[in-house]
Image (cartoon, one colour):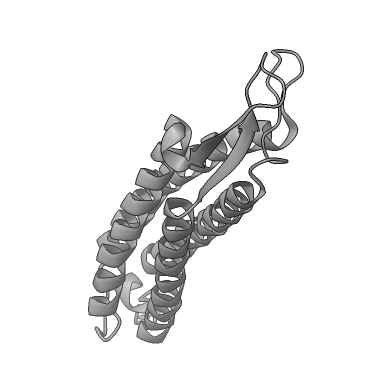
Length: 194
């Protein structure tokens, strides 16, 4: 009776992630974080410069108009939107530096991908809530609401509304980038622990 001996390879060696795959994920991560930073900066600048003064008729006094400015500080939703995008811009600077520091490392700890994914989800929630708030107020400005007798204002403040729409679109783009970053970090983490 012969006893068979078989050499077994350690499990950790067969499932070790390739350093090239995590390095390429970090290169994509850096690119996406740079786009996130750029979109947040442009959205904040566009929103902060959205100001327009128009001649508005005085109700009850026909023929009399007064100059009335529209700016982002007139709405708490727009202020929240601006603050949320500013925080996201700061967050993207910090995570961009973090990703750049790991791009040349041969091995990246799985904990880094987990930390980035969790924080990306938190920032995504903040950006999505702020975008929804600003978008809903902007939609009321565009269409009005006849049920509560709110008139539309974008026919009077067209430049202000264009700036607002551009800023909301850029925030939606930032939200999509954050979703992609969450998926990328989850995939990288999955590849590291598989």
